[in-house]
Length: 439
Image (cartoon, rainbow, N blue to C red):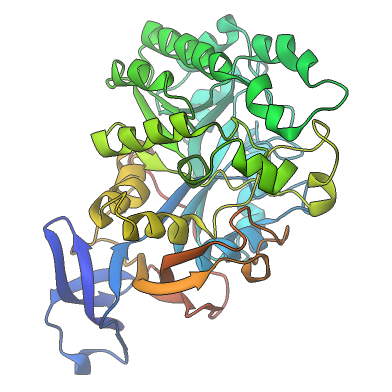
C-alpha cells in the first residue's frame, strides 16, 4: 500500500461503517482492517467520515479572458479547500469554448495548474451545431452546455429551431440553463434604468423558468435526447420534471436551498443576484421536498465569481453570479446537521448522482478498484464561513458570517492528499475526468 486511511467512518454502497482504506497506485486496494505496517503513510481518521469524492458539476472559473475574477488555478484551489475532488467547468469564457481549438486551449491551461480533476463543457451555438457530436467526445469534455436565456457571456441559443438542432446533434446528456429569452427581454422594462435588486426574481420570474423548461422538454422528447436542467428554482417546474424522468435529470444549488427572498436581497443587495434568481421561501421549501422525494439528482454550486467592484454596480448593471465551490460541502453538511438531509443522500447528490448522470468512469463510490478520490469531513466541527477564508480570487462569499456544523478536513485525489486541515499540500496535479461514453 502507498497510503492507509485508518478508522474512518466510511459511506459505502453497503452502508456506513468504520473501515480502513488501503490505497495502491491511486486506487482503493483494500477495505476493512488493514495492517498499518503495510504503507509508508498512515492517516488516522478516527471520528471523521470518509465520503466518495465530491464532484461539482457546475463551476465558472473564467479562464481564458476573465482572469481578474478567477482562473483555473485559483478556482480549483478553492475546490480542493472545500473538499471537492472534481469539477465541470462552463464554456462562457472569452472566447467561449465552442471549438476544438478552444477546448484544447483550456486543457493545455489546466495541465500542471489545477488542484482537482476537471472536465470542460462545450458551449452550443448556432454556428457549431454540426461539430457538436465530435466535440462532445473529445478528451476532457464533459458534454454540451446550452444557454436558452442570456446570462454572463454571450452564449445563447434562444429559438426552438436551433435548440432542436442542438439536441439532435450528438448523444451525451445536454446541460441546460433554462430561462426564456423572449420573456426576459419583454420584462426587462420593469428594472431598466435602475431598480432594487429585490426586483431580480420579478424580472426573471417563475414563468420565465417554467416556459423554458416546458419548451426544452418538448423539444428533447421530439428528438429523444437526454437533458440535465441546471439550477432549478421554482415549485412549478418540479411536477413537469417529474413527468419527464425518462429524459430529464435536474440540479439544485446550495444557494437556492439555503437563501430566500426578500431577506437575502435586504442583507446582501446585489451580492444575492444570480441567474435564475433566489426566490421566496415557498420555492425553497418545494426544492427541499423534491430532494426528499428523490426528484433532485445532484447539487452543483454554480460557482460564478465576480469582483466586488463589479458586484457594487447599481442594479441591473451589476453582474449575476456568486462563488460557491468552496462552500458547497460545509453549507450542505450544515443541512445534514440540522436534519434536512441524511448523509447518504448528501453522498448521492454530490458524488454518486453526478457519476450516474454524466457517466463518469470510476467515481461515485468507495469500492475496491475505484480511484481513491475521497472527501473526509468532520461532522461535529463548528466553524464560521468568512470572506477571509475564501481562496477564490473574488475574495467573498454570500455565506459570510454563517456558522455551520460539518467541515471538510481532507481532500484526497487518486490517493494524493491535496488538502489537509485547511492547507493545500504538494503541487497541483489534477487530471482530466474520464467518461464511460468516451472510452
